[in-house]
Length: 348
Image (tube, rainbow, N blue to C red; front, side):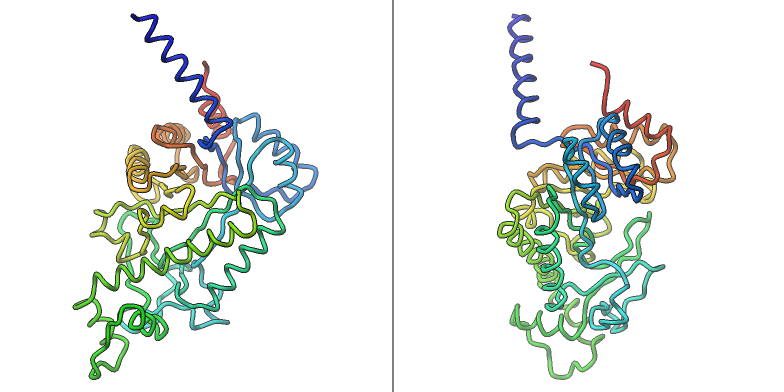
C-alpha cells in the first residue's frame, strides 16, 4: 500500500512539474527594476540572473536588454504607472485629486496621485500602453498605481478620501442618478452629503472607475498583443484592514477586478508596513482566495537583514503562491544575491 501511495505521489509530482513548464501555471521567479545602462554588462547581468534561478525580469524600455533576456529564455515584463505621481499636476491641474474638504490633495512627501476619471488622461494612458505593446515584445504588463491615492507603505497610513473634483461629482451624479440638493454649493458640502447619505454608492462607483480602466487595458491587449499577461501591483490590504479602506480609500476591489486580470502581485513590503514576515504568507493566502488567480507576491530587499530577506523569500514562495518578485534590483548586494540563489535553487 505504501508503494502504491508513493507511486501515485510520484506521478502527481511529475505531472505537476510538466504543467508548470509547459502549461498555464507559470512559476514566476522575478526581479523588479532590472536596468543595465552599459552595453557590455547586459550579457553579464542576464547570465547572473540565470545562474541565480531567476526566470523573469521587470525592465526599463531597452530593446537590447529585452532581446538578451528573451534569447536566454527569460520572460520580460513592464510596470505601468497608471494614476501615480505629482508630475502632471502643474501642466494638467485638473488631474490633481480633490479631497472631501474641497482642497487639492497634498503631495504626501512627494507621493501624490491622479484623478482616475479624467477621460483625456485615461485615453492617453491607454494609447501609451498600446504603443508600448506594439514596439516592445514583452510577455506581460503589470499595472501600478491602479487606484486612488494614498501613501500606504507605512504602519499607520493617512488614508485620504478622494476625488471630489467637478468632473467626478458630475460623473457620479450622471452614472448613479444621484441628484445633489440645490442648497449644496461647495465641494465640501457635496462631499460630506455624499459620504453621509450615499457612502456605499460612492464607494462602489469609485471602484468601478478603477475596474473599468483595467477592463479597457484588457481590451487593448486583446487587440494588440493577445498573449500578453496582465498583472496588478496591489495594495496589500484585506477588506477588514483599516475599516475596509481598500474599498473606500484606494478603491481596489480585487474580486470584481479578477475577470480581467491574469495575476495579482500584492506589494507585501513587510518592514515598510511594520508587519512580521509571516504577514507575507497571510496576504498571499487572502489574495488567492479572493481572486482565484495566480498570486506573485512582491517582497522588499531594501532595509532588511540578510536573514530576514531569506525568511521573506520563503514566505513569498509558500503555497498558494505561484512565484515571487523581488523589489528591487539595485538593493541586491552580494549576500542577498547568494541567498536568492540558494532559495530559488534548493538542493533536491
